[in-house]
Length: 215
Length: 215
Image (tube, rainbow over all chains, first blue to last red; front, side, top):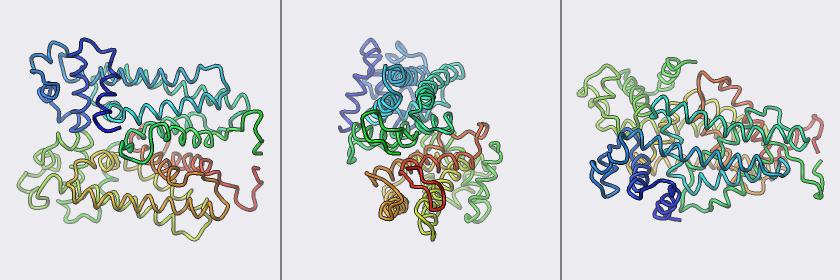
């Protein structure tokens, strides 16, 4: 996957944004924010990248912050959906944690440009938007914490510090967006598989019934 | 530790930078880059924060990029020193990995503002400076990989993918700079202790001689 693919991928990822001009502007904003940072980007830069005039941009977004908020909201909604889907599956805790880590990592690798903007520009959000995003982040945290707590209760996991381990698991997955390189030697799926294994070790997962016990 | 403490701490951390005016400018640059991003910061902003004129800045640094390079170089030198010291200690692999993670995490928590600039503005470095920094990062990576490989050879660790696990260990520690909050509930030491335990689990560390075996 090259940077064109990330852009295309990004474009498809924003399918809920209509009309087409609003979506093109959002994709252009992600690229500009990722390259130069939020504060160094002007609405004129974004309109230019989208092949539009500044006046055409204002039809869809009143401010640059509105663009960042829209990007952040869609990214955080997607993250929450991934983690809540995994947490609610009718499966053992180890299987749910494996699925949560794999899909969360895959998203951060495949959409690393968007994920960097979403993760590193939180401070640029207006206070009311920041509160809204922090609430979504708390729910993502709660989804992972729930899997760990249920795994401990079921005797599947050995986790002395559930909130701290939750934080570490999410942090490990999120940082994939920083280092992931489309020209690197691992695909998003391969990083997902590696990280799922490392996280199951972190929580001291016992092997599922039917496999040889490790202790 | 509040943000003043981070600034003070940062100021002491730059003790190798002389004269005093050059050091004040470096601390001001770290704060400005962290707040607004490298591209949105001007040398005038940096001089102003340091209580100096733009002309006084140019006595010490010819360009904004020279300031970023100096910050990045000092930060990466420190990271490498921490990891190579831990890797070279005359101790078992588990003890060396524990020390490496604790001190690397402590540094990223205590100096999170500097660490964010160092980690997130790599693309803004001039090509020759970027190559120099990438070489330092490869050596940091090698120090951790060495501990893992030696642990595997000594039968202390069970690590199916040494390069991937090395990447994950460094990534976990580096991301502390993103989420660490001086008003949060954990001190840098506490995060270091938690993370050392999680990393020892990731590598399947066997208990040291003299403690009860886990398997």
